[in-house]
Structures are given as structure tokens and as C-alpha cells.
Length: 54
Image (cartoon, rainbow, N blue to C red):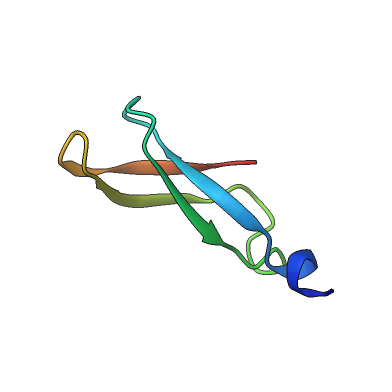
């Protein structure tokens, strides 16, 4: 199906070193590079950058 081609499931891992991850989808046509989002890490209880890992 075309569901997995354009919008793959990715993991966003915390850069704080806690090992916390978010799982989401991204549009590969709009964001061909690896995503970096600033999200809340409940382990360190603050917002940190989350980087895409495959």
C-alpha cells in the first residue's frame, strides 16, 4: 500500500540521554531530512530536542 511509502513511522529520541522516545509519522516529501523537534521529556521534566532515528 501507499501508506508506508510517503508517511513512514519514525522514532524521535531525546537528546538529553534519557532514552525516552516519541513515535510519530512524517511526510517524506515535505521533510526528506531527519527531523529535529523540541518536545517535553518527562524523565528530566523539561523541553529538549528530539532527533529522528530510523
